[in-house]
Each structure stands twice: as C-alpha cells, then as structure tokens.
Image 1 (cartoon, rainbow, N blue to C red):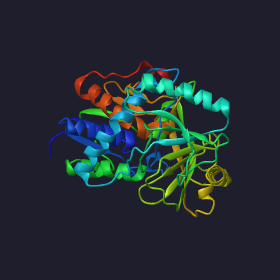
Image 2: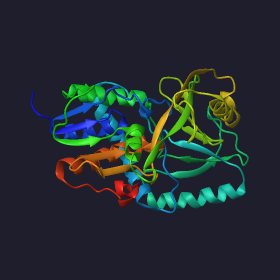
Image 3: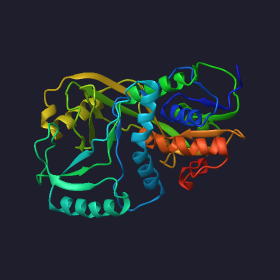
Image 4: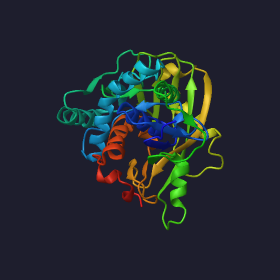
Length: 345
C-alpha cells in the first residue's frame, strides 16, 4: 500500500472535512480514530448553521460568512460521491422581536447585512405569520435571515466517511503517522494541551440536547427563549443546548435538559405536546480564544492542528477544510490571526 501524504487524527467534523478537502486535491489520506467517525461532539443532534449578527464586523465573522456560503456546494459534492444525505438545507432562521426597540435594532442589522453579506443572503424584519414553528413574538414581528442552514450532524459525518471510503480512504482505529499529520481530536486534544501549561488552553464544554417527534422539515429553524429549534429532514425537530463548564458526567442528561425542552415548548407553542424521542449529551471543544484553533501544531514540529469548533464547528467546516488543506499541501493558508494556535496559548 502506498504511503499516505496526509494523516488525520480524529474523525469528527473537522478531521473528516479536512481529509475530504485533501482527497479532492489528489492527496493520499488516512484517517485514524480509535472510536470511529463522529464519536464525540460531532455525533450530536442539533445542527444549527447560523451566522453571527451582521454588525461589528471582524475576521471571525467574515470567515464564517465565507464558510456558510460555501456549504451548499461542499455538501452537494459529498452527496454526489457518497450517496448519503447529510441533512443539509439552507432554509433560514427565525427570531422573535419582543418590542419596538428590538425591531429598531433588527432593522439596523438588516442594513448591516445588505453591506456585509455580499447580496447573497438577507436579514429581514417580517410579520410572524402562521409557519408551523412560529415563535411567540411580543411585537408580532420576527427576524428572518436567509443565510442560516441546518444539517444533521451524525448524518453529515456519515456522508463524509462514506465519501472518503468511495475515494479509498479508511477510518482506522490505530496506525503510524505518515506524511503531514493533522490533530483534530476535539475535547481530548484540548485536555492534552492543558497538561503542563500554567493556564487553560481550552476545554470540553458539556452540551445537552433533545430530539422531538415533530415534522417541520421544510421550515426555517428558530432561535427563541435562548434555545435553538432545528427541524430536520427526517421529520424530527432538535432543541438545544446547554453550555456547562462544571459537570459530573459529560455524557448524562438531567434536569438542565428538561429546562431546555420546556423553554422550546414555551417559545414555540406547536411543540407543546411533541414527544421527546432522544436525549443527548457530550463535550464540545472550545479553545481559550473562543475561535477555532487552526494552524501549525504548537508542540509537534512539522504537524498541524484543527480544534475548538465548539458550537460553530459544522458551519465553519467547509472553510476550515479549505484553509487547512492549503496549509498542509501547499504550505500556506489564509487563516485569521485570531484562529492561530498561539491565540489560545
């Protein structure tokens, strides 16, 4: 068997996406993960690909915009090769507006979107209407942005893994490093960075989410009551999530998830009687800088790291894959300075 040009350690969304970007450029790639694809936070259930507000613009928001605009082409290519549906659909997002002050702020942000979103998406103030997932709105009006999309995290990782298999790439439980080595090992990788450092480089933040039996598959997602409400293409609706720094068991659910479900039901009356069919908990990797950590590995010379996706990993993945493939295969990558590992060390 020929030597690999790239070894990716970690089969979550960052590792799989970067492996895919390298393969599509002709590189020989191997992926190593003792737990298989999407075993960590990437095996979650929410999948809200939503932008930051279009104001106070910075490199992070510009990078995210590029990635969200790239997503449709990225996932269509994966589907074409794998035949597996990742659950991607750009259907937008609704957010209720409580009063006149909220409307004024939203209208100001609409002007920001016109200037910043390249004419490829809108931020609109519209009447709440009678959509199946209509949230309660004190003003009767809502924000509707057309940039937000949804994805089913597990299905997306399964689609990437299948596409890689079609290209001859195996996801191995173990093996030696070959070629350029990328570490995309999530919360465990951040914990390893913390060892021997006087301050925390990053941490796993626990999240809890639930899946409801409610079919709104063609509707936009909702952000209301501090909760993401995301209808999936399989007829389920996900709600989440908590952000817990302190916890006893990272993989158990508890009353905090009950509160999330209650908040979703209060915000969107249509969910009042929708049964909970799955409860999920896991650790999402957040770097100290709160931005993705991308670039040359700070401890292993000649190696690379992609970590810290936290809540925005799936939305950032297409652009992360592009810039990391540039860096590993071509020796350069257009990575914002705030994303470089030194920003968290």
